Image (cartoon, rainbow, N blue to C red; front, side, top):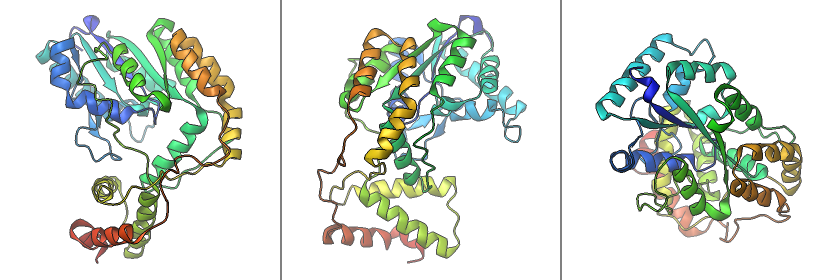
Length: 344
């Protein structure tokens, strides 16, 4: 990459369910202003829409990961070269010295993929930002996202996450000072966004950083029931739910749900499952504080110290499927896109 020795690259490598879609949306939506104000470029090269979001600005650098992943059936040396050349051209056109790439697909990347990514960047100086959250909340949110994307999750409540491995590999490749781990805490969402953007070199108090934005929100109980109904109908019609259709369905469902009465979040983990997840991952989460500032470490340790709730949370809304909700779903499913797709 031309003049790569002078280039500073920050990779926000996940993890999943730590407001990555929100961060990507804010960066892409405000890319020109952020580049002008802070000299930080969020490149268009290597970007792809997030399938779980209806927001057109929810764009991440997932194509970089797909180009360097060590699955030989998907890796393309030609694609690596194309992305490298296009990125170099975009950087040169913007006269950028600092760029940020963001893809949670790197949250579980292999060591080989990490090395291939470094090679793609040439001599650019790379640093990695990695966000984590309380283990039981993480597993529940991942299950929620899988259902939202019309998939059945594989929930392993006794297994250990690969977060520590990932961070240790980046540390080995880049050095300890080039890896920073942040704490995502649901109780301080605005504070977390401020800390992320501060690490990226953006003024955390800049009005561009909209703390009220929650891109790709958790699926509700109504959303879960609608998705289950859709899967059964599409299965009966012999329609495969591929990536393109999944994205369109999510866009339309998000739009439809805004017209319906508020519904509680769909929950999946029992208190016993939560206890098991915490026990299996507490030690590695505590070790990850080695890559945190004192402030971040305190936030994580405080979250880990909270007892597992013995009663379901997020149930401040009556989950009953009332007549108004049912009428709204029926109207939505029998008009326009859904009517054509479902043959109703």
